[in-house]
Image (tube, rainbow, N blue to C red; front, side, top):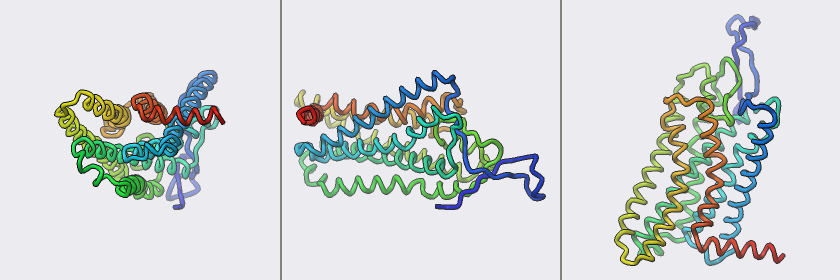
Length: 326
């Protein structure tokens, strides 16, 4: 890992004639400045949500792994997405829970950059995975005769691996450059996570090239993925409307409806936060929006897919039945 150096302005330090900077090695994640009782209440609420998210997505992964009937491309993508959700929510929530009950609320400089890197890499991966799921539904509905020959298990594995690799490569260069940035003034981040907005606000160069590159890259990933998904489902919708069977249309709409719900919950808050950061969102709004796509959205994924999908509900009942018997 790169050697990380952080600097803060200290007007009382005159030991160095060329600079008035003193170094420190950690940030303070301010989080929610509520009284202790409310902090404990939020801790209980977020902990419950986190446990339910891990349990729900884990149940989907186990159900898809154990039920041979669900070893199809659509469910392979769903299982991988649920597995990804577990890591995505775990990149920020545990530290958030610790800080809720902590008086210091500190995070090391290296820890802050690592949280930023994994959070955004896994988030980018989610966007790419949603694209592959949309592409899969497009092939299945618009080209049903060619679908088995195109969407093979080998291609599924390639697409999943490509999403994981691409997600972690996207923010590799920005994080390396960020590790060499100089920070001036306060070390307090008025946020619940190491978000780029409050983090760059502490930098000596508030209009740095790194900041612009980071926002442009985030915008391209979010908008590019959303446009691809929207285009895929537009073609799917046109194809579904031509289906003569009412049952076929209903099934296609049900499957795509689940995907589109997840897409809306995922891309909506991200678009507000990162596509146009110049809107001047208040710190409170940033925190609430971040909580939505870090805690709430990952919880909805297993609920949406399990409640709207008969095959998934049957597989989950089978898993729960086996557990109760044992």
